[in-house]
Length: 189
Image (cartoon, rainbow, N blue to C red; front, side):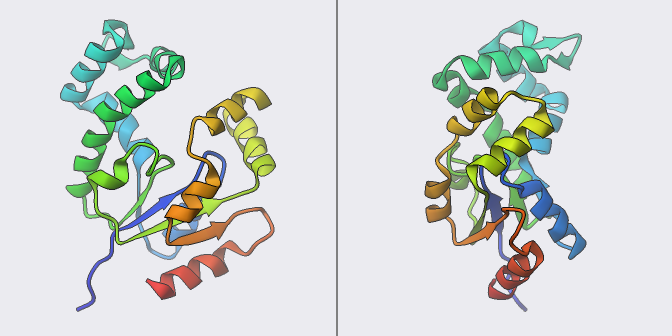
């Protein structure tokens, strides 16, 4: 019986991780989405809600509803705030992933947040894209200015470092054949 591998997919904002995960889904590979899990857990976990209120303040929840603008403002104030949020949210997400039946996980900040130290992954796949492509994708998707998109990108580890720390790279520049790259990686696992 072949051993099940734990595989993490990472890459900076706008690299196209979600699209790669969609293609994996078409191949029957389910991928745990850390961003969606964090949003779900911030809505449903009383323990996490309590920790966020202690950290950010009571106004981070209004009538039990997460006030994303309050959380985002806190996150953007300082790197210390961002680290504090990650230290509260990520252990909860890691426990949720480990309790699930998923073998694949998507996280934009796998290395930045230390998430890779909380969960053992056998392989890490980095999705990369040229900076201008990433900026354009973020601006369109999130309706941000170029400066805002760059600010978010610069708050993450440099793409080169993420590629270097990963076992595989998928280049998502709008030209390279993603399905071919994905199939090549799957065969090597």
